[in-house]
Length: 505
Figure (tube, rainbow, N blue to C red):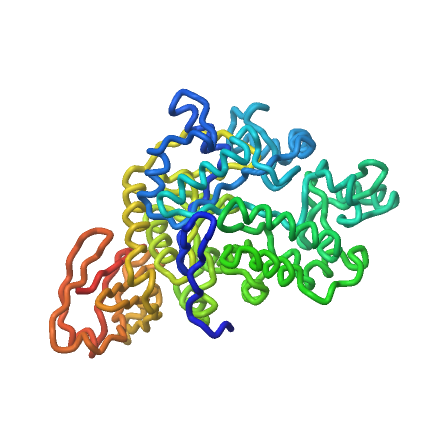
């Protein structure tokens, strides 16, 4: 495991923005967002002319960076394939029953060129958006897709060696896994556990020419933003790529893909932020290969489907490892939190996920309680009533996690105790933060049963005086004697999916 408990701050020299070591990110579906802003303001809105008040609203949540998902030029060929794919059309209709052809623009991960789409404002528009974010202390995160490109990407013709190739026999025997273009047979992009994606061409992570071209590409991207979220980053690891493609990929290079890419970018942009979408328990490997942050999908799954005991076990991992995880309860790949975490469970999951060490990821529509997971191919979503109470909850939470205790302090997982005839403490999770005189205690009931516990706090200085525990989310005040808290533990009783987020004074 890494030897330090906290990463160094990440600085963007191009904008002057400093991303803290425990940043909060906000993912925006860029095309959807701009289309909705255009409708709201009654005029065409691109990245060039987003109204200042819109940026101000984002700033009010005190995000450290905004991830503008899907700014790159999408593939006309990929869109055509999506339009003809029955499974995709069914998914579009399920999410948006009245979807028409204008709503379908193709996948943002079927990229024809790493140029900002002119319909969104082009490169100048992106620069304008970045400047607006930087003026409010926020950085800019963009997508990078290492595993594949669109089937009409110029590299297909100009550099066929960059791709996994097939034969006529391959195409004949597996027509859903290969396609023909310009007299060449190219593999569709895939991961080893699912069928191939029909609208992308598979790059060869072992090809030296591709690696050199990717370095140049990443350097260009790094000049336009403060970090990249790398799609399915673990697919490029030697272990996974060899398993997926075998002899087709050729001999593995001596150096891992990311161990070549990341240092090359950091030589020119020393503090550029790399965020990995990671699954299959490969978070630690990706951290070792240079990523600042990796998705914590395991925490999401445990919050959604498992018990407090499994969540506590997960949080017992080395703190230095946890500092480099991205906590979330939804993003564009997952169902909406309001649909997965019903009723009060959504608030409990949010408090649990976003008060932990590491980075935090919020998602466009999450604060309003959207329930429909929109396919990324679409630029319109169904109308849903906005949940004002939930929005207020998230505004308060997003600001409270900026407290120095959580930004700069020491985190500890707290032990819990019960009684011989009451083991409901197993339904709870608890942790605490300390930075100078700033103390925070978080206790969450991850069950549908009222539960009690004594929370053990590691602060001997509580002795000899009374302390006020103020719940910053519901503004309720509790008072306990410090000696009782130290000797017996902090007594809590929480209703189903109840939670406390205490400031201790």
